[in-house]
Image 1: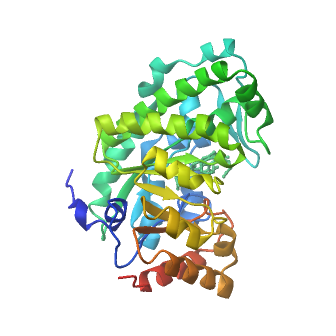
Image 2: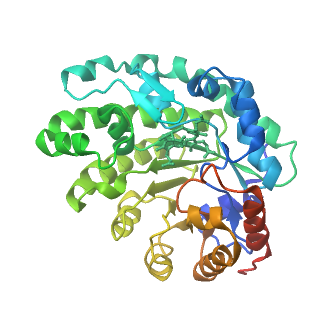
Length: 353
Ligand code: CP3
């Protein structure tokens, strides 16, 4: 594997706390259904998890948005639910409905989760990472490969509810009612997620992002216990094995608690959702770490002057510190490609030096 000089890569510069002349740009969920080339290869797999575990397909899906848009980062193509799947919980993606899992909601049922099979099950992901790094050396530009995992709280909501949900009542009730039992599930996920991310880095990812998509439904006390504490443990373990690999946290919807999150977890970057006021984030987050965000994915989908005005505000607000341009949440499947092209043009035209 040829390794490019890390200091030349914009995304890594920002995560090292440096202001870059032009912000690094990538988009959460950049691979996937908004690209017709994704739909073509998606049709080749019998289901979504098979797609994730077939390196020929996952390598290609990872590279597609980088080839098309020349983004500064590739994000490993996979899903946060490969962890419960690898632990032995039955996970299925039902087309048009979303993920469906055989719910685990008692301490006895936790015995169904088998950590010993984790790495064997995830071996195709590790293989894909090595191949992506190799492929990236043949593309123009300095593209950073980002690995990822779901945070324990968010993954636990799927494990307990058996799929997506509006307000995660079952999970939140278990967490309040029997914190020791629920904590046992969180600990299993902390262990598996730490090992998974360490292996991703061993295999070649250059930064990792921890997606806590449902962090925003928790009260401050519960946020400390189920978002901050598990994230701190994972970060501690990653840093023991790989002290120089930057870590981005994404406690989506955390509001004022984003500040506590960056102070307590000591992340290198924080991804913020589109509801976070820009000046507040520049003042209270960007002095601790790189800020990543936060264009509304619906502004991108809509395009036009409204999108352009939002982009200009974001670029201006974060121009004094380390910044990575991204969305506030994943790109939506209906997003037109020309809107993404226009976004890339505007971000690249911005000089914040
Ligand atoms: O960013 C990327 O391009 C890498 C790929 C990626 C996927 N999922 C691919 C995917 C990433 C980083 C994820 C993370 C993920 N998965 C999260 C956290 C981020 C977020 O958006 O909040 C969550 C909550 C999931 C769980 C998940 N996966 C759901 C709820 C769904 C169904 C809804 C949907 O978007 O389709 C998925 C399926 C999924 N994951 C698809 C893709 C491309 C679509 C499946 C398909 O192609 O049939």
